[in-house]
Image (cartoon, rainbow, N blue to C red):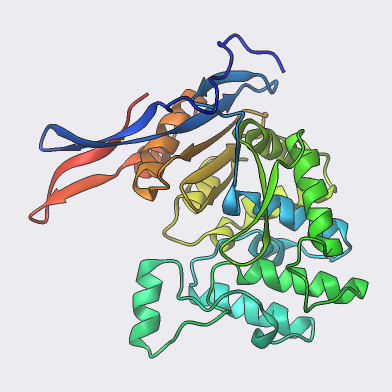
Amino acid sequence: MTSSIAPFPSSSSVHPVLAEVVRSGFTEGSHRGSLVVLAADGSVELALGDPAAPVFPRSSNKPMQAAAILRAGLDLSGERLALAAASHSGEPFHLDLVRTMLAEHGLGAGDLQTPPDLPLDPVEAEAYLAAGGVREPLTMNCSGKHTAMLAVCLRNGWDTATYLDPSHPLQRLVGEVVAEAAGEPVAAIGTDGCGAPLMAIGLVGLARAFRTFVLAEPGTAERRVADAMRAHPEYVAGTRRPDTWLMREVPGALSKMGAEAVQAVALPDGRALAFKIDDGSTRALGPVLARSLELLGVDAPVVSRIGRAPLLGGAVEVGEVRAAF
């Protein structure tokens, strides 16, 4: 990979401020992090912080996990494949499809090893609780992915009780797909919030992986995942989520956020970005994503919508979280 920028700083360097918190004209806080923007040819166009250092991409790894499920032989498409790569909001149509997929493969909600949780979307969580709902594995935002993992295990005769063990055949395949798409070895393996193994790669590798998916040949596992996510973005996230807005309103965009304020996006011509906010604050995610999209040359109304992060004082808007680069 070639680049006109200076070498990446060491991992001990203090990362730059990517977003600042401005209230009543006074800067009361900031969020540091690392970011990379790739040009269409895959070269590094902009690097802030240390985007070569490994991070846990969290749910931004889900497209690679879904591709591994396809490579292992599970025939998914459309909304089902999008849901396999999702951090769904827990809206009724999400939960209905998870139930349907479980039933299609002779599974039940009790087979899921996701931790009991409420719907990810606060509006949905409030409605769910008001209706008498309780935390369940099915309502956890990764239940679609786990359903697909269980289904492919059944197809291959793999043990379903240990499908989350890093040594399980499925999880070893996931690691291979992540390393191949990122163009770098997996630096560490941890445990994600849903209990699944989590593969660490650099932000450059994460952006490269998303670029790999949008540029993959039609019919490949990678391209099938990218196409399903872009065709059904509401199943990847939800009706009130930036990933959905971006994939719906910017033709060909592939977008997936991860916990701890990780984000990756690729455009159909190969331009891509990835970043992580050091403190994991999701309030900085929208403004940083919007600014990064501007640097990629995306000119669409959705960019302003994603970037808007107002601060309130006495129920009146008195400031904002805004990008600082």
